[in-house]
Length: 174
Image 1 (spheres, rainbow, N blue to C red):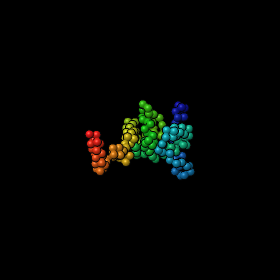
Image 2 (image 1 turned 30 degrees about the vertical axis):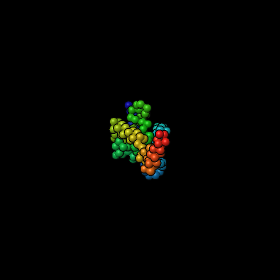
Image 3 (image 1 turned 90 degrees about the vertical axis):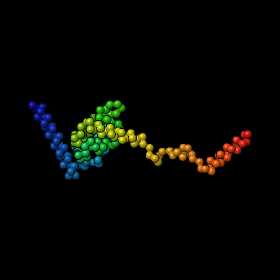
Image 4 (image 1 turned 180 degrees about the horizontal axis):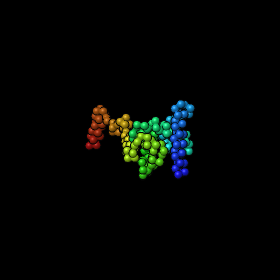
């Protein structure tokens, strides 16, 4: 019974710390810092995860930012937290050459706030992968080689001159 009391006490202490930090941020007593979302590098994800695990005040600030960014977004919340170009390195399960995105606190917390299940989130991540791959394959018309530069089109007078040179060469060879 003592352990359950201790558990409840810690739970309420964490909620109280979150509430107090949220109030301090709202009243300007505590600087929330610049918005660090969306995260743009794997190192940034790792650093953020490390700071969240070590510092309760930082975790509370991150919670407030995640809640502000993810409320009502649905599966699109992932784009608020992680840059699209970084998503190509992650998937839900961590299979293949990609890492699991579900190991990060910001993702699990955002998923909880946005009320999105793993299947829906996985579909959103796969759609981002497809979009990135399509963007990498697409070559805009301005960058495509022009056919007249690859196979030069000659003007009619150039063609006539080439025909005459060819006819003269044939007549000389007779």
